[in-house]
Amino acid sequence: MTAATPRSIETFADAARKFCTFCETRPPLSPDELLELARLLADLNRAALALPDGFDDGVADPGSKVKPLPADSWAAPFDLYWDVFNPLNTDPEEPVANSLEDDVRDIYLDLMTGFVDYDAGFPVAAGWHWRFSFWGHWGAHLVGAQRAIHFCFSAMGDAAG
Image 1 (cartoon, one colour):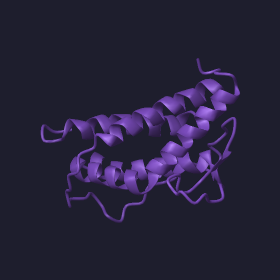
Image 2 (cartoon, helix red, strand yellow):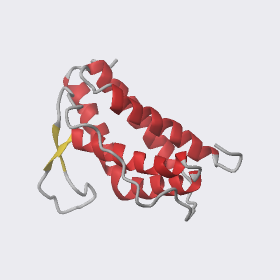
Image 3 (tube, helix red, strand yellow):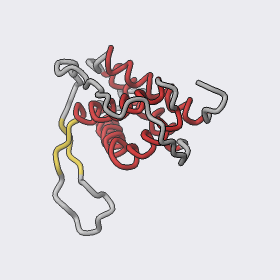
Image 4 (tube, rainbow, N blue to C red):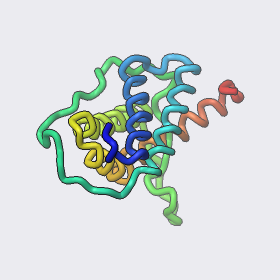
């Protein structure tokens, strides 16, 4: 981007672009591809935690719409997994079924929404969107997906290693 773009935003944009490209081109059909998805999620998580708390009210096109992934693009070794909404709740709640496909799709849409600003030359606005939506939405999908993938590999007897 420009000299004024914080390095942490550039680093995040690189990790986000790799994740989005993977989602657009390589649905996780095999354990190797699922492991690659796990690596991309880890890179996204780390980069998101370093995003600055800056705000820029400049935006490219507030009405622009991002296209979701095609409906037939998903074929992972598993989809549904169980989770709880609030793991810090000391009064146990009933587990809910989550979808790895839904997790990936939601992360993808939030990242691509930020790229509307980033690619139009508003990297700080994109960074703010990514950080805000990480803590408010897609971050929960990310850690849920990471946990489900972790247990998938644990159940296979550490096939990832």
